[in-house]
Amino acid sequence: MVKMDTRPPTLAPEPANAPAADAQPAGRGAAPLLYLDNVSVSFDGFKALNELSLVIEKGELRTVIGPNGAGKTTMMDVVTGRTRPDTGEVFFDGTIDLTRLDEAAIANLGIGRKFQKPTVFENLTIFENFELALKSDRGTWRTLFAMLSGDQRARIAETLSTIGLADRQYQIAGTLSHGQKQWLEIGMLLLHDPQLLLLDEPVAGMTDHETEQTAALILSLSGRRTIVVVEHDMQFVRSLGARVTVLHEGSVLAEGSIDHVQNHPRVIEVYLGR
Image (tube, rainbow, N blue to C red; front, side, top):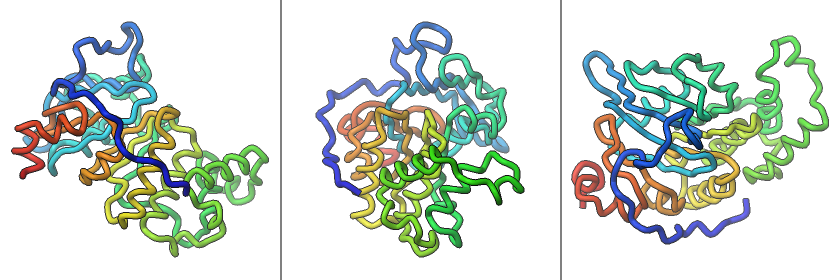
């Protein structure tokens, strides 16, 4: 994988608010790609999300941080249809109400999610993993015997190059390093050309070198896709140079540049410490 310059650009500090005052709700003016407004979710009396409001613009790279139990995973569960909110609105691409759709329908809209632990077919080669990912919407019988088209092979080749595993395409996935398995799973999502990519702690358990390569991969994808990264590694978050949202007790505590949130008194108190 080509190593990229991951130094963050200089960003002016921004107000530590929830969505900007001029953010447009779905259906009014230029809509963001993802819009959450006053979303609440409770589990047995515990409020996992508490009137959470969040706006993600098209083509944006956003990082989300916060202590355990802040609501980061629940937020992604709501967006992908795994959890129904008790109250609030969740709109995708302006007018699509995600709260009315199931997981499969949401995935078909172009929302891809990578969980913290990579889920790949470890007994198959990298290429075979990609082949199955492309055929996942077909019946089992057709999947076993269907031939890849030229376009599909070209998509696999391009994605292998993007994730830096082109020279390992016939290697058994189970023999890959932890980081390489993470890149493989990201590649399997990219094959479906998602508009929105949700990455849950993508560098957890990686070596320093793998972490640098993962940052380079994400930066190479930013702009062409909308990406939300949930992460605890603050050095990695800084290397992405993206706008940061801090969640605490199910709502937005602070939002802005990495320098802004790292110097925010409440963020220091509840999450970063000194």
